[in-house]
Image (cartoon, rainbow, N blue to C red):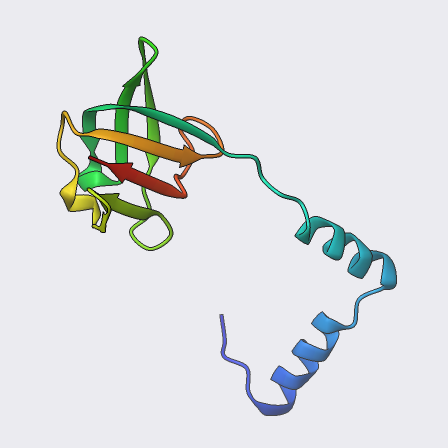
Length: 109
């Protein structure tokens, strides 16, 4: 990779922004799609990779969620928290698109 400067950067940006109407319409349509989320609640059974993956027991199954340090909102007893606050046995609710995916939110008690 090589850095770009001045006129070269301007040309790259103009080329990127100059898209056919079909592409612009498709991007607008894609930006309005809402991703359905599910909520699962249960006690934490495992914590892996320093809190980057957390497992709970739900309906006789173990389900996991990936946890981002910046994108996943974490609360413990209603207060904002970090991944390091997770403890085995805490009851948590995962809000995510599906089991195994990155959680949007994890609320623990």
